[in-house]
Image (cartoon, rainbow, N blue to C red; front, side):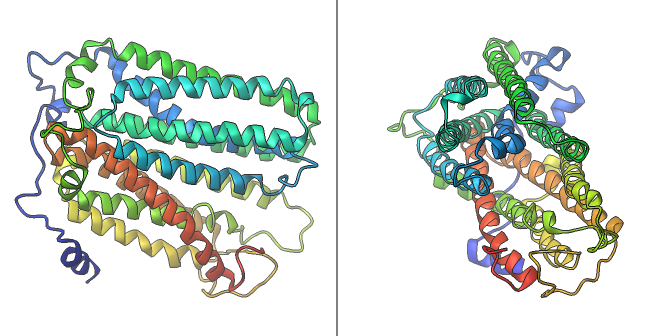
Length: 457
């Protein structure tokens, strides 16, 4: 019923005119080894691993600051932002990302994507190095001024990363789907690594209360490692542009932008009509994910932890463990995609599966959601099992990684080579809109979970 409504409203049709286009980026030929004589091989999968590294660097920007939350909590002590800095981090990143994503999509015909990727990678390196240096000169800051310094760094990195993500996935759309999958898998690897760090930090915090000096030293080496990763991403991409395999696929019209006055320049609206079902599906996938994770899922507690127990270690580790379960499931979903699935599954099927994920709304709300001090619930507590909750969470994460990546990989196959770069940008924009809408939806969902004001609990 809902699918029919969407089809009638948006003229979504899986007919003959909306079919994958066979081109030199076909997934089947890439995986079967049937390459043109003129197509160079990706020896030792070097290009594949460089794409993976780029995916890591893209998601690293946000996670780099969130993972260091304990350090920032100590350093912002005495400022009015000590307890709310993560909210400011989220709002600033989301707003800046949306503005810059929109601008990048609007400027798609006047920008050389490869040069933009290079510049933004170098900007990221500078920001990480400045942040690393700041951990050694903390005496020069007050707690409030350091907050403003970090927010400034976050604004720059959010803007840079928005252009980086838009340009890189626009560029990656010209390559075989395997390479889009590599970049998306790289993003998931960051999530797994960060959740492991968070789990270890939660365990270590139980054992000892680290002094401020140790946190500063740890933050220095942490941001130094982040800076090193950013340098490797920048250097590897510069090297990538000299490789024959890259040059072969970058001869498609995504490496060099077309001038605005060119009659051959693919329009955004015209290209969007060709992949609109993919765009809707992509936005819905991430809307559902961000509406529930982590706002609702991080509020779910172990049912075996008694409220009156003096030992809180189980719940202290329960939440970091849930992040690990999600990120592992998300990563597995991205790497389990087979090449034949990229063009064999129809756009309408992807949309239906995306809509099907709304079933996770009542499923999670029927788990042991604990918000504030009230016991009032809109949904009854029917899922009274930690194991069953983790199974639901794993399925939720697996479907997010699988569907989100499959949509990103499949959409460029439905247009000719000239439009692939624009499709990559449209998919990134749809993803960002889904993330933003999901973040906003998380507030009424939290209110529904406890029948309370989500801003005061």
